[in-house]
Image (tube, rainbow, N blue to C red; front, side, top):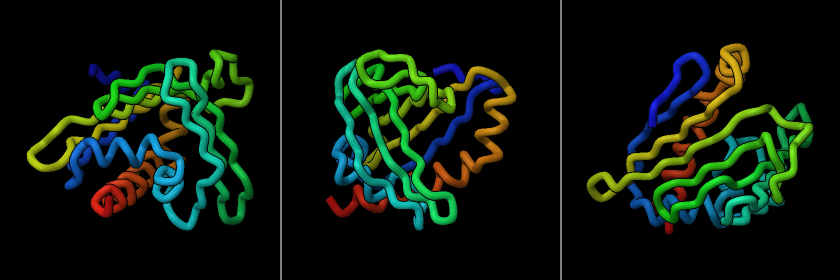
Length: 155
């Protein structure tokens, strides 16, 4: 995947768990709720419909900020390899007026006994990319990825 440094953010990690377990953590709502946001943020009410056009919904309870609901649309599903979704649309391909405006690629590759994990966030503009980075993309998504890796090892 080509990364445009003007508009994209990229996070690459090695996870000790194999792709099948990492995939489960991404695609089973009760597992996703356990790692999706850095603690003490609580993720709940997850809906993930693993078909193009399916809904990807979460509610995050952020201390001091309240609820942050998210409703995105699944674009591509390649089991245990690739999950692509966007918050530009809701499930059913409906435009999403309340979006941050990015598309996420979750890419999993076998690497030894574990997984080469790559999360890429594509943005409309450099300004939006910079805003996402200032919000803590690398620290937040990095922390969540560490939580994902730890959970996957317990499966």
